[in-house]
Image 1 (cartoon, helix red, strand yellow):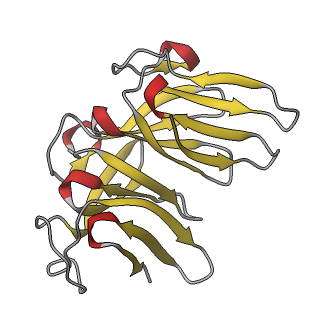
Image 2 (image 1 turned 120 degrees about the vertical axis):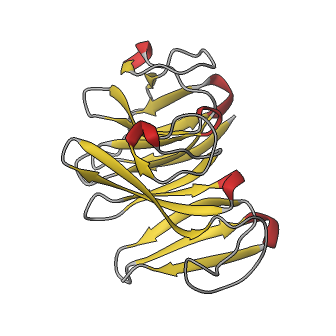
Length: 194
């Protein structure tokens, strides 16, 4: 079951193959290969098919061709370098904890987007929150930028906004705005990042 797609600068299409626990690549000529993932519903960093995912849900790609994956059932955000090396940049089991790399916790990340500076945004589906992940030297810092107070609906700043199962998202570089599908509220919401 494909759950998300992105296209790189060479017109290669990448697919989050949710139930096959893989990231697939489809070239402009139509050749389909496994880009990363062993096919086992498990967790392992590694190169290409030596890495494992558990229901990868969302994909984003940066200007240099690096992929970011919302690894839904592993409660982690993964990075796939252009040489197919998979590393974890946020998450360590289910929870809602801000912090560096494996000390941070998410619960079923779904949508993912990346801005021009390389900041990664994630819809933290079962935490009803939007998270931001930024590189700090060799480490990555995960922070909650909206929601995280349980199911609800309310516009406002971090300490007051509420949502219900945020899913897919997109970043608008022109307006520096993040859009997300607020699934159980049946709404499209926006966060002004500037």
